[in-house]
Length: 334
Image 1: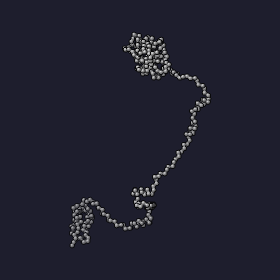
Image 2: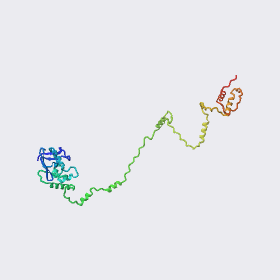
Image 3: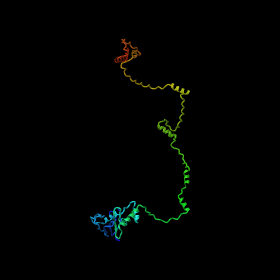
Image 4: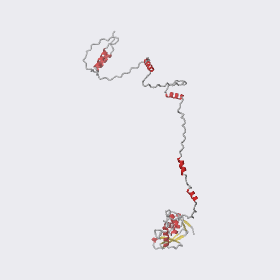
């Protein structure tokens, strides 16, 4: 048979590898006219003999010698592609289990719906009409579903017991589940809260807290028990008992302890009135100034010529003179 050459080292249209047995010989035809003959040796040497007179009918390069990669590329262009919605169906119709370019082209002879070229391998006596009909029949069946299931013998009929067992093998007791769901849920057991240990204080702790806060002034001796505070009397609504009234009067009539006299409060001097005084104030001030000094009688003042009343208006200069005369000390007589 010869060696087998792997096509994965050459560029393929569908980017998949396939096996090409060597040597191989075939011819390229256009309908029933031979275009060229190809032969590939065991050493991958490609020989092409052109038969047609029209070079434009050639499907392989003619400007250079062919190599094995050209044959792989040419075969890949003459078969249906892999990984399409119809690939598995087409392989099944051809009787193939996997996608392989060489196996497919031997079955379809390279016929395509785009042109009238096809391939005839060595030992094949088929003509174009037969190759085309085979291809058309294959394509007409691609759209129809292919039954690939394995037909088995009909199973023996089952008895009524078997049928009931099958029908009830997944039966669920709905009534029991519904009853379980409708049962009242048990109330959770509530535990009594433990008493808080921080809500009680001893008498010593309370006393220490009061001393620290400055709210009480207890004696230095802490051993003496604290006397209970007298109960507060309720308000009488503005009425006092006879006993309370007598105690208040006694406390009021008791002589107060002699206390040092408070220092006289400095009287804030009033601003000058601008030299305007009433007649009554002037007369009072003159009377006070003319009063005799004690214990000796003051000499009679010199008659002062009375000036006509100014209507309560004096100048600032007159007022200052009058005040200076009134405040001057009286002469002591020998």
